[in-house]
Length: 263
Image 1 (cartoon, rainbow, N blue to C red):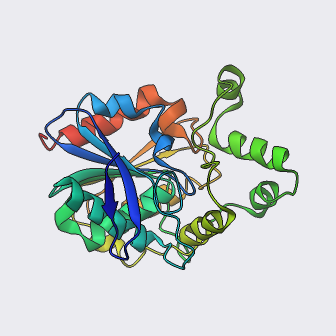
Image 2 (tube, helix red, strand yellow; image 1 turned 120 degrees about the vertical axis):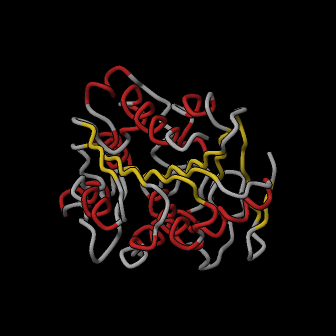
């Protein structure tokens, strides 16, 4: 896979697929690599040339032991990849922490973003709605197997888990170092895009599952109201990984929005 170089010299591994006329950048969640999108990427490859990448600290990208992990910094990494790939502007679809990164990308680099989709994400503290204390305790328990099960149940409904035994691509890159995993957690937790949201000029769609308590669904209207002209679409019954479990609804919804631009 090609390697771009971040402004601070970190290598960034990315992958290009598809043969469409337009370009779509897909941004994964916290502590996840490009494989986050494996379950649904083909839906977009059929229409666009898609770009996924490994955040610093994940996959085949560099893993610096520095403080260079932040959502604005990840957005700068995306710009470096677009430059390396020879792409002037692209549609951007970010989910979870990827949606936080996408907020900075659209606000700070408006010439690089055509249309924007923010999925299962939030504006961050202090204006966003945080997951409740019970969820935090369940995720932080010392029993690793129980914590993993909690995460899966936050991502997917019981019915889906019963019929889909894995592998699961949305519960973290297993090859991450503890240092990088911790820095990803801090990067997402420290995100505060509230003041940047009104600067987003790209047409924007906000998507969220109604039953998402990992990143509470109440964040979706906050984003939609804060971003000029943004649209809001809620997917009934969906949890955090709505884009995978509710693929039959979510992918067409996003594609219809992106194709309104004619590219």
